[in-house]
Length: 155
Image: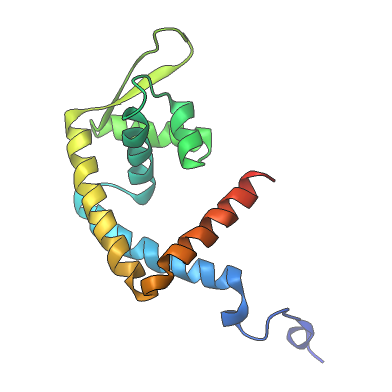
């Protein structure tokens, strides 16, 4: 018996593996987002961080890098690098924080707000199109994803 014959899978086929299926759906969804974000000179990660900044800025005038990392469940070092890129693209600017000398306040520039609004419209339309196959099951699908996020955040 060869080594390949000894490999054991828990699932009888890839389509029974939730991790495999999630990976496939994620790749297809990211491919769709890339198509709509490329013309705006944004990557998906840049969009996520801009959207987090836009969302947080509606409630708070002093959004920091840490706030953006927490909102987007992203690694702080990665957030720092991506924000630098967004600053180079003139989509954001950094200012001194009024009370915390170590922190910088992150603000959308006018250009950043414009590109974010275009990206939001494009991504929301892409989402509606991509997930339309779920029909009435979309709410349950979203609830299941929220459960997975909540469970993982508490580990």
